[in-house]
Image (cartoon, rainbow, N blue to C red):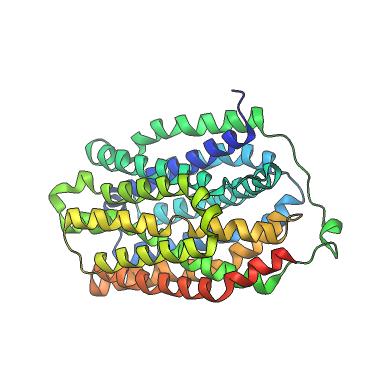
Length: 382
C-alpha cells in the first residue's frame, strides 16, 4: 500500500480514533457487566490516565532506543490486544487491569504518532497537524455509535472485528511508507538544545486542561445520554458520534483557518464555544439538545490540543519526543486528578455535575492560552 508519509500517519490517527471510539461506545454495557459504581469508574479512569501519561513521559527514553517507525509497528498490534481485553472486562479487577494496559498502549501510540506527524509537518512545511487529529475524531465518532449499537445488541468485544480493519490498514501504511528515522542518543540531548521548560510548562497545563475536558466528554457522554433516555441505550453513542463528527470536520479544515487567523485567536474563539456547550450539558436539557451540545463541545475543543502540541514540537525541533514527553507529563496532573473528581461528583450530585466541572476546567485552559501563547510564538521568532 504505497501512499505518502502524510497519508500513512493519517491512517494511524484514524486507527487510534477507531480504538478509542470502540472502547468508550461500549462503556455503559461494560460498566454494567463489570459491576462498577460511578465513583469507582472515575477512580479507575484516573489510574488509567496515570498509566497513559507515564508512558508518554518516558517518550524521550524510548526514543533513545527506537525510532518512531519501530515503536509504531510494535504498538499497533499491542494496542489492539489491549482493546480486546478491555471489551471483555467482567469484574472490577479485570476492568482496572484492562484500563491500565489499554491506557499504556494508547499513551505510547499517541506520543509517537504525534511526534512523527510533527516531523512530517516540519519536513513539508505545511500545516497538516489538525487534519491528523480530525481523522482520529471522525473515526472515534463513527466507531462510538457502532460500538454502542453492537454492544447492546450483541457483545462489546464483537465490534473489535470491525476495528481490526483500520488498524491493519494503519500498520501496512506505516510499514511501507514511513522510513526509519534518527534515534536520539543521550549525548545528543545534552547542551545542544535545552528544553524551554517554562513555556512547555504553561503549554502543557493548558493542553492538560483541554484534554481533560475532551476525556471527560468521551468518557461520560454515553452515560449522560443513557441516564436522560434509558429507552435509547443503544443510541447512547450518538453524543460522542456528534462530538467526533464536528470535532473531526473542524480539524480537517482548521489548518487553513489557523494559517489565516493565527492559532491563538482560533483557540480563543473555539474554546469559548466549547465552554458554552459544557454549560448547556450541565443542566441536562434532554436527549437531542444534549446531542447538539456535544457537537458544540466537539467544535470548541477541536483545535486546542493540535495547536498546543504543534507549538511544543516547534519549540524544540531537534528533540520532539523529549519536548512532547515533558509537555505530556506537565499536562498529566489535571488529567490524572479530574477523572476521580468527576466520578465522585457524578456519584454525589448526578451526571450533570460532571459538565459543570469541565466548563470550569475549560475556562482555566482559555485563561492560560490568552496569557501565555503569544510568548511562545515570540520564542519561535527568536
